[in-house]
Length: 71
Image (tube, rainbow, N blue to C red; front, side, top):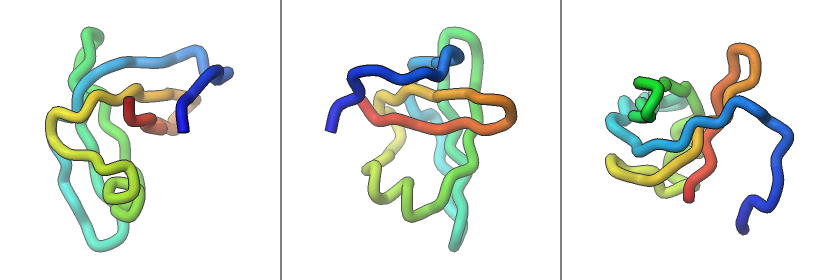
């Protein structure tokens, strides 16, 4: 799957700096040129996306929600 278009305007490209895994949810810190962006996503999503420290990602911010797309 590749992302061809998305309607979220606030996008921050960066690298995963840290992952704090819990049983159900995990915190993912992303280092971007604008600073650190933190997302709380399910631990299952961390595994499904194959996120590890150093992964290239895009943080998609809408209101108080931060989504992650792996590049």
